[in-house]
Structures are given as C-alpha cells and as structure tokens.
Length: 421
Image 1 (tube, helix red, strand yellow):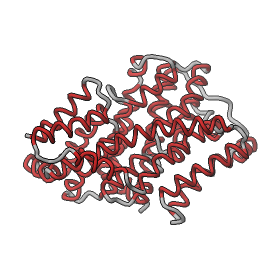
Image 2 (tube, one colour; image 1 turned 45 degrees about the vertical axis):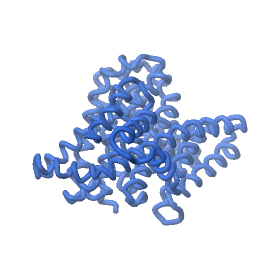
Image 3 (tube, rainbow, N blue to C red; image 1 turned 180 degrees about the vertical axis):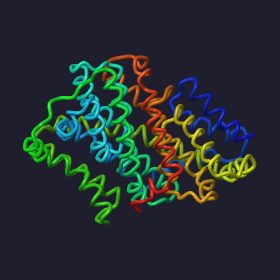
Image 4 (spheres, rainbow, N blue to C red; image 1 turned 90 degrees about the vertical axis):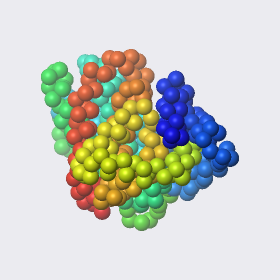
C-alpha cells in the first residue's frame, strides 16, 4: 500500500507542475511520514550518498566540455564537415543535422546540449533553404537524442553507478545502437525530404572535401581522444571528461581563438546551474530508489511479472511499454536511478545482461525526450526555432517509429549491443 501511495504522490505532484526533483523528494518524505517510523534524515543521508561518487563527477565535466565546444567553434566545424560529407543528398541539411548531432554526441554526452548546439546553427540554415520550420525543429530535436546513446553518455554513466555495471562496457555497447539510430533517422529524413522537395547542395570535389576535413581535424579528433583513452585503459570515464574540458579549452582558446575569457566564465556559470539541477535530481532520486529497495519492490515486480507470464518475449514487451510511458512524464536521469535497480533483478532472472539492459532502458527513456508531455528536446528545439510545439508534432511520428525499430533490435538481438565487447 505504501508503494502505491509513493508512486501516486509522485505522479500527482508531477501532474500539477511541481518540479520533478521536488516531486520525487516530496513523495518520499510524505510516504515516510505516513507509513513508516524511519527518520526523515534518511532522505538527506541517501541523497548525499547518491551523489558522493567519483564516477558521478563525469557528469558536470561532460556538460562543461559540451558547452565550451559549442561556444568555441568546435561544434560549428563539425557541422561544416558534416555538410561537406552528406549535404549533397536529398534532404541534405537534414542529414547534416543528424550526422553533426552524432559527432557532437561523442563529445557532450547530453541530448539537450546537442539540440542546443546543433539547432542554433542548423535550424536557421534549414529555414533559409526552404525547409518547413516545424520539420526543421522536429528533426533537430530527434537527432539530439543520439546524444544519450553514443558514448560518452551521461545516462549510461548514471546507470553504471546505480547498478554497479562497467561504464566502459556500457559506452562500448552504445556505439552500434547509436550509429543505427543515426542511420534510420537519415533514411526517414530522405523519404520525407523527397516527398517535400528538399534538395541537397552541390557536391564538393574530393580534394576540397579532404581539405575541409583536414581543416577541422582538431574538432574531429576530440571524440577519438575521449573514447580512445577510455577503451585503451589510459583513463577512466571521469578522467576522460576532465581531459575533454582541458582539450576543448586549449583548442577553442589557442587554436581556433573563438573563446574569450568572458565566454568561458559564462559557460562555467551555465554549467554550474545545470549541474545543480542535475545533482538535486540525482540525490533525491537516489533516496527514492533506496526506499523502494528496502521495501523489496524489485522482487515484488519479478513475482508479479512471472505470475502474469513466464514468456521472455512478452515480459520484454511489457517492460518496454512501461518504460516508454515513464519516459513521457519523467526525465531520464531520475527514471534511470529509480527504475534500473528495480528492474535489473527481473532482467537477470531472464538472462538479460546488465549491459544490454542498460542500452535498451536508455533508448526507451531517450524516446521520452521527444514525446509529450515531457519531451525536453522538443521544448529546446521549439525555443531555438521560435515556434510552438504543436507545429512539430505532425512530423514526429515517422521518426518515433524509426527509433522504436532500433529499440526492438536492441531488446531482442543482444549482438546489437554486445558484439563489440
């Protein structure tokens, strides 16, 4: 009864527009007061313990690296190269947006940072070339979701911390699903653009293409340094985030010379504000999740599901539907902290690897970033484009179906995630 009340209070608070961190913390505190004799200090204790972790330090540093690269010219050069590589295709600017988002995702690890950085440049450019504003914004929002699948990924860092799964393995496992999502989004963009008459730009001669890639080498080498260092065992994901910050400052200030001290100060302030919000969510979500664990909710869920069916395929369908619905109303950070420890025992009982589970859980919750009513990516893209979200929704469905197709592959074909491990 207390667990039902806990979730009821959380969703009630969210439905009346209480910020999600306060909703999660408030629901936990009210439930403790009404149903247990546990001290309220438990909430603050577990909230602090939840963020007192070395791997968690990767989050603010990856956020900072992404913001520096956005302000310091690295993001723009990535877009320029993407334009030269795929801009000639039907719907070329749409493909450029997707490819640039994939590159930027391998730097920032954040969907919102990717939408903001790429959208600020690409949405106005698509408007100038005759792309419908709603389509431009929708495509940018959807492409930004690659930011939490392609490593380094902030949600995968969180999943690794709360479940004890290797973050390095999760990063490797996210490579192929992230690339596949980019590919199906490009295919979807191609057919929509062909129908709408969105043509590509003139194709560059090979010599000029190679020259443009060479000129952007300092930007393009960034993900190689970050991911190569992790996979080679030179540094941990947290240390890689710090390396990304240092490298981005050096390139932006001394090589491209596009980042002033004033810009650097602004990015530090913005990162501090965003990290404060994230840390608040992480802490209270951890207290929420630990309370669920002490009430043995994971084992109760397992028994409930097995009581309905012991068919692995049906169980996975049920869990995917549940996660898709949760993603519509909750940010992927608290959702991962709360749901990953709850559902992992169920996955292990059905011989699903924690790494594979981490990937398809993250894809599920990532889809929530582009589905109302939560849909953070939609809000950011609509703000950048200066249009209401309603103008974006009619273009959303083909891209949602494309992403769900990769979700199903990641769920039922383990090799999609595990082949590189």
